[in-house]
Length: 404
Image (tube, rainbow, N blue to C red; front, side, top):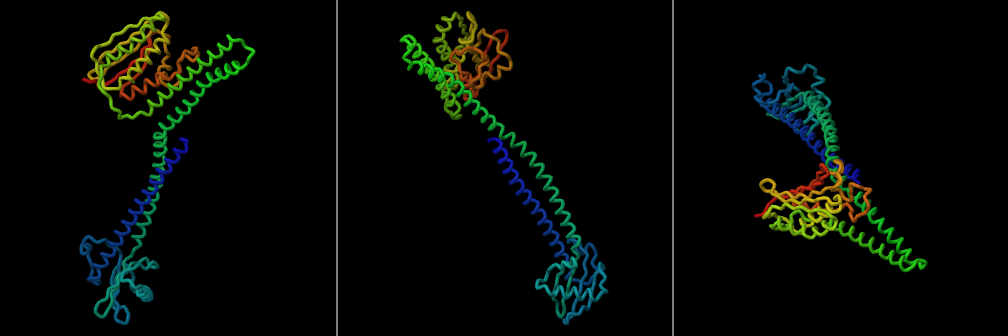
C-alpha cells in the first residue's frame, strides 16, 4: 500500500513540476520573442519617418538595431530609391521578386520567411516606402533560447525527480510505520487470542465428553472461565489503547492535586505488595498540582505499580517518588528491584505486545500496559522512559504545566 502511495505522491509532484516548468519556459520564450519583435518593429517605424537618411547609432535612441534596407516605389510600382548599407541593392530581379512578395501581403507589417526579412509598408503622397529588417539574428537568438530552455527544463525535471523521491520517502515513512505497526498489532493480538481460544475450545470439547468424572468437568469449566477472563482483560486493554489513540489532542484538562492522587493510588497496592513479601517505600512531595486528567494519571500509576509487583524479586523493594522537576515540571518515578533489563529492551518496552522476557510464564501481562501509559503521557505533553542500573529498574514520568 505504501509503495503505491509513494508512487502516487511522486506522480502528483512531478506532474505539477512538469506543468510549472512548461509554463515558465514558455513564458520566457514568448516574452523574449515579443521583446525582439517589438524592438525590431519600433526600429522600423522610426526609420519610416526618414527612411533615406544615414542614421547614426544614437539616432535610434534605445531601439534595437538590426540590419535593414529601404525601398521607395512610384505609383506604377517601380523602385525609384533604395538605401541601406547592409545589402547589395543592385540586383533588380531580387528587388522585383521581393516587392511582389511584399505586395502579396495584406498587412502593413509581416515576415517573408523565404528571405528571413521583416517588412514594414508605409504609403506616402504618390509613393510607397518599404523597410526591411533582417531577422536571422532574432531567429538564432530564439533557437538558442529554445535549446537552453529544453536543457534547463530537463535538468530541473531530473533534480525535482530526485527531490520528490526523497520527499516521498520522508512523507510516507510515518504512514509506512503506522501500517507496519497496525499489521504487527493485528498479528500480535491474533497470537494472544489464539492461545486462550485453543484452551477454551479444548476444554469445551472435553467437557462434552461424558467419559470424564465430575471433578474433571469442574476443572474444565474452571479452565474455560480463567481463559475467558484473560481474553476479556486483553480485549479491554486493546479497547483502552484504541481510545487512547483516538482521543482528541485539544481535550480540556483540570487542575488537581497530583500528590494526593499518587498517595491514594498507592493505598490499594500496599496489601498486595505485603502479601508477596515486598516492601513499598514512598517519598511524595506535597501540594504538587498539575493540569490534566486525574483518572488517566491514576491509570499510569496503576500500570507502573502493577509491573513493579509482577517483576520484582521476592522480598524486594519498590520506591515511588514524586517531586518537583525544574520550574514548571514534576517527576514521578517507580523503581523496583528486579532482573536487569538489557539496553536494547529499554527502547522496546513501550511497544505494543512487547515483553522483555518472552520465556516468562503467563502472568496476566499482554505487553499493552506500558503502551497505554505512553499514550496517556503523550496526551499530557509529557515524557516517559525507563532505566535499568545495578539491579534497579526505574520508570520515569515527567509532566509539565503545573497548576496553581
